[in-house]
Image (cartoon, rainbow, N blue to C red; front, top):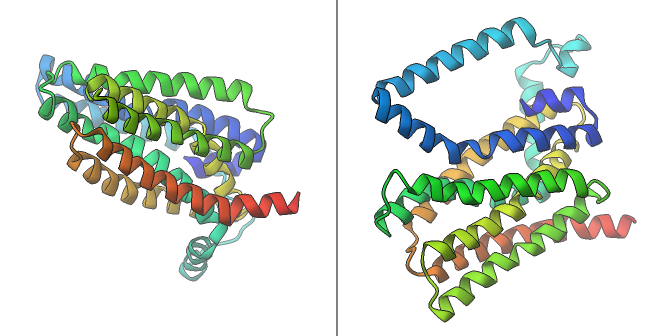
Length: 283
């Protein structure tokens, strides 16, 4: 999907479109357990798969008849082969500027998606919250993410991508500091977790779009390859982060703060030394 957007729109336009896509796609893991829970309650677990299959079939039919070809190589009669595809993947993986943006995207977005997976462990197992209620508590952070993304789309247009990334990477220090402050004063409960993670969600909403766009536009003729690499490494990162977050002790907020600190530090160091300092020197 991202490859289609970058095929059709230029960098400035694609930033707006990707923002709209993130507005819809990233909150879905927060709403999915809620919707799936009610389907299970009303109709039984089989209908979760039946409804999903019907949805996929309908979308596939719609795309087959309505989605035109947008590939640069196809439209210019350049037939891809395995060798060129492999070279494309290799050029992306070897590009340090791609990783400068991708690491920011992975660390912030990975923590956010990992939080969705950790919610049952933290709220149900850790605090004894009902399975019917925990999803609603998780939606608090999701709603703030949506609001922050909408505000960013409206008021952050004048900022260059690298400036926006640095501002909100540095803003990621706030939830980290708060997690240690809450631990120090003994304010460790569901509310403190939601506050910390909501602030991380807000920072993430303003990081994932510019990092995604800038990483992809490094390769004008290989956008589909970049999108594929980003998707693959995102799934790997989310799997790792989900496992780590599920294993954290939710009654010890300093562990959550330490985990966020590690992700933040990696993002800051890689982006600052690989991308940001170079952009300042060029200007």
